[in-house]
Amino acid sequence: MTSTLAAPVAPATVRAAATATYAAFIGSGFAFASWASRIPQVRDGLGLDSAALGLVLLAIATGSLLALPLSGPVVARIGSSRTVAWMAVLLGVGLATAAIGSLAGVVPVVIGLFLLGFANGAWDVAMNVQGTVVERHLGRSVMSRFHAGFSLGTVAGALVGAAMVALHVSVAAHLVAVAVIVVLAVAWQARRFVADHDETPAGDGEPSRGGALRAWREPRTLLIGVFVLAFAFTEGVGNDWISVAAIDGHHVSPALGTLAFAGFLTAMTAGRWFGPALLDRYGRTRVVRTLAVIGIAGVALFVFGPTAVYAYAGTLLWGLGASLGFPVGMSAGGDDPRRAAGRVSVIASIGYCAFLAGPPTIGFLGDHFTVLRSLIAVAALLCVAVLIAGTVRPLEVAGARKAVDYAPELS
Image (tube, rainbow, N blue to C red; front, side, top):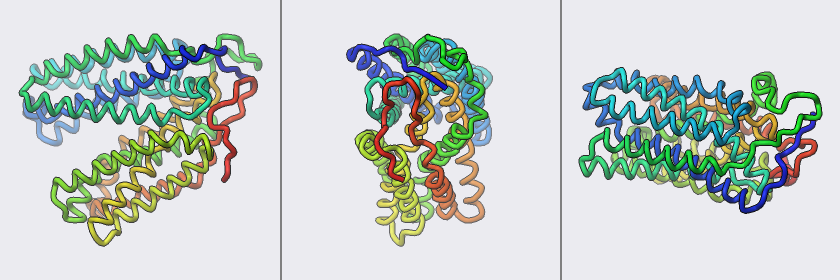
């Protein structure tokens, strides 16, 4: 197989594309957290109990799971720039529909959330594809910083949401304003993306946009998907259960339980921001394998630590260990620019199953072994990640400029 990266692009153009990619990640996180910050008010306005609310929120996951496997062929055909722009518009429509629909009833809210989830799933694949392109043009690791941008977007969305609640701004006014801002900002920035790959025919006779569905039959791609699933499970369970486990298992106050969660997020965001230097120096496999071991140690310390102090230390190690697995998996899926859309779509589809399965899995295990002890499942999956970490080793792509992270792999 031969493949080429898009023709050399001016440094200023690449920097503009990097800024635009940050905007896409931040905008996605900001929009999603803005919705999440108003869920209690939507629940109260519609008079939903916990079970009914769970079914309504399932619309987001349904939309995302439908979009993820379809997004590879779409991105391969129309490119990451147009996909992000169109999905930003669709997400804005979905968010506004859910917001205004909350004044009318459950059905429009479900429709809006399905559109939001679908748009977010396709948007996620497209912006990760563009992230891999920017990495190759820059010649250094930056994907994890894009994911740190998503985290910052969620923090900003949550803080703005809290302010809107405190100021008694209505759900409809708040979320419609967010929808308009995100659509205008992200759709405009997406025009500055660089081409995903060049348009010359591939040397092996395959069409340049073909093979998006073929990625489902590639062992390396599927293993990277499992690798990403392990880290997504680690991240998702931390997001959903650390506070609960700290309060119920270590008997700390609710405020201190929230502090444990904040420590987890802080460590993960720091790892994503400062991780690229380690990836460029030591290579993907060695870094993510080491971080997986750190994550295992953190989970063990959190679960078995004799006091809350040990648990807090465990959350920091857990967050650090979880930080780079997901973005590195996305980078690995995009090593060959002509196959990036399909492979990133497959990897994301497999990985995001963890975000859907994680909460109920821990909840089920928690009913039998306590929530705190059930978190050992996280360490078990990280052990799998340690074993298959070699799959993210960069591909040598014929004809392409030297891809990011071709540091010697010491495994």
